Length: 204
Length: 204
DNA sequence: ATACACCCCGAACATATGTTCAATAGAACA
DNA sequence: TGTTCTATTGAACATATGTTCGGGGTGTAT
Image (tube, rainbow over all chains, first blue to last red; front, side, top):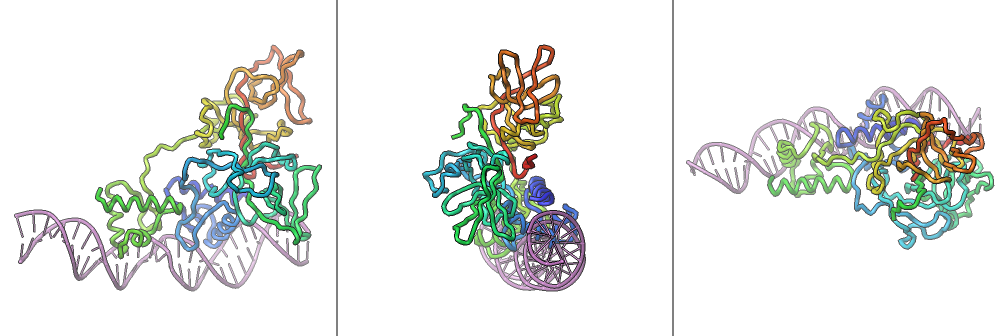
């Protein structure tokens, strides 16, 4: 997420906090110092493609930043990230972490537990909880969770002229090329990391 | 408040819960089985006069139910961990992370923002939030926040026959010996790490 | 160089949406 | 009965708002 996108998101959140409803496109333009609504719309479209915003086409002020804790169940913790196959299956839910309000824009998000050191140079270590925000697209350079030939993995997504690659953050591992023959799927974007050290703070 | 007004208010609340934004006047009309927007507007005017609704004239979907819930401020985020001196002072609070229920057993705990790469080999990077549980003693080998000669720092605590040391987790830094001449204080134990979005990603 | 993602502008367009107003219906009351 | 008040209606109005289009700019990666 670029600096500008960060500011935009913050503006929307602040506006909603102040007024109880979301800003219109032109109000955003004024607030961000832009002079054309189409500029703002383009920015919103990008944010929406990234999965950090929800909106309804044609509906005024439908940006959905906050809202609506459903039950206090919390966010499910699903499987070990390397274990594979049926992510999302109910049997794999290892527990819940009630951090819901903490990520206001995160409908449908969940935690994965990191296994292995393939992302250690990004400071992502085994046992860490990574929060995954489901989305269909992910831009090059972002970290996300992917399903490659049935195997779930956390990597940096890289798209070049030579194809798509999943990059580890560890010199001991090789970049993984994604070819046409592979079954490949973006599970979601990595938006947050949570690491629990001492025991005695059990959340599950 | 009449029965009808009660239902109207409930409809607005439900709609907002479902969609993340408030209904338009015509959506209310449809949802309430009324056939004219002006009917709804009259009802809204009455509710607003009673003070249970807030809206901005001429602004689409600006219904904001008056909520009197005091917001859970959450856990304070205090200073940069390297910045030093008056931790806990009000001026240093950079914001709040509403993870209150998340750590119910952690009275007095707070977040520090990591600055610098001295703990990078433990996967603790600049921009990370570390949750500090205040305590007076800490056992050797644990990570904690310490105040050494006025300077606040996050290190691994090590107690050997040769004395007490604060160990960084980075080859570029040297272990810091703690002598009798130093003013030294344990601030608390490092309990949890939390990393948001794309902060702290730059690796050296 | 090319390609691409991001950022910006201004104008025009379509419609979603709040507002106003005259008219009607019903209830309460003398 | 009539009067008065409130609730409702349907139409028309004004504008707030999302959207589209064509154009241009910048920076980065290839």
